[in-house]
Image 1 (cartoon, rainbow, N blue to C red):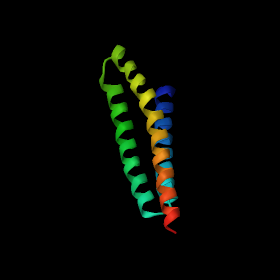
Image 2 (cartoon, rainbow, N blue to C red):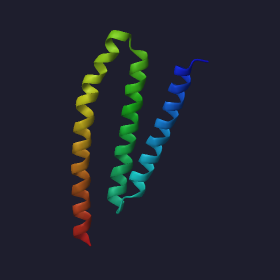
Image 3 (cartoon, rainbow, N blue to C red):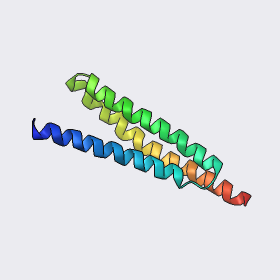
Amino acid sequence: MYMGIIGGIIGSIIGLIGGIIGTYCSIKNTNGHKEKTFMVKISIIGWIGIIAFLALMFLLPSPYRFFLWIPYGVILPIAIIKGNKILAKIRQEESNKK
């Protein structure tokens, strides 16, 4: 077997495990019910988005699949910033209730 294939498989497994652990810790470290619900929802959306991106990278022909990086590079940072703002708002609302 080629070392590149073995490295790709091992790297993919390590990346997947890291994503699962990160998702678990993000959900586990929430404080309230509303915050946990939001984290579960955003995690599901994120996993679906990443899986769709990877599927399209494998399915589209070579010159076109590289154009997927444009919306990915724009949408991902916007989603992270907006998600963090919503999470901060939820935390503020839950801290005001106490």
